[in-house]
Image 1 (cartoon, rainbow, N blue to C red):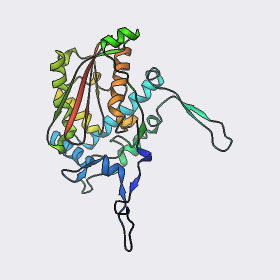
Image 2: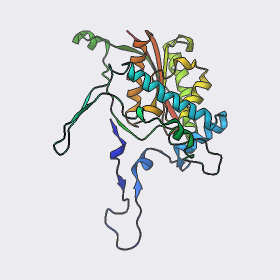
Image 3: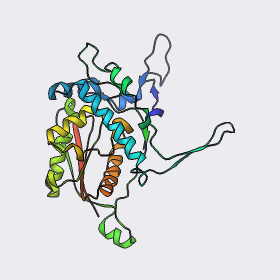
Image 4: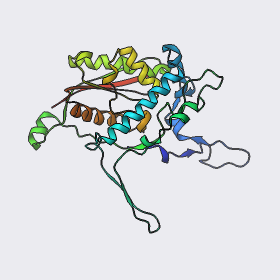
Amino acid sequence: MESMSNTPYYLPKQRFGSKFGHQEVVDGIIKDGLFDVYNEFLMGNAAELTAEKYGFSRTDQDDYAISSYQKAQASTAAGSFTQEIVPVEIPGARGKPGKTTTTDDEISNLNIEKLRAIKPAFKTDGTGTVTAPNSSPLSDGAAALVLVSRAKLVELGLTPLALIRSTGDAAHEPEWFTTAPAKAVPVALKKAGVTLEQVDAFELNEAFSVVALANAKLLNLDASKVNVFGGAVAMGHPLGCSGARVVVTLISALKEKDGKIGCAGICNGGGGASAIVIERV
């Protein structure tokens, strides 16, 4: 579970109070989530490094973001998320009736003209390509998974959705966390005894559009197998929730596409990434 909208601002020097002068207010989202402490810059600056190194233009990233929203919208309209979204009851205020939310509320916010017009968020010298709308939005979310051993599965008479074939982790320099999934995914695939060609669906967390673009390029993935229902650019990246969310969606994608093997990869802000290979049963 993650509620980025409730992340507080910190007053780091106010434990014992201040007597005089201006004081610092620290954004908890940046301090504890979106800041590279090794290079002392925002994660978006690392995304800019990736775009420059691998040759992804502003247009490439905008096109990808638009595609992510459109896939998420189409999948929602088709009912693809119905099996994985728990309805949320929202009580009404001041006598007004409540409502029940059954779909993600970000995916309807696509405005193509505005998306292409917004200025870069991290490099302001005229060379920037990473913007707020071609990155994942700040968001709230929760996802849950139940993991059991084979023995417990039999004992409780449960019906499994998928089998974990393997997991993998990899890391390199912190500023290149954006491409760490391309290192973790092969580790997980090798442990599972699975080739890239045998994977029916991939989920790559879209912290930024360029993250998905770069890792798909490095792994030479078939684009038709990647984030088939859209991704975090369209649905949000609640930091502590996203790892579980991509696995949940991967299971749904395998079921809808009648696939068997799925692989998910997600980066972290310290230069590392984790990957998982699952088999639908």
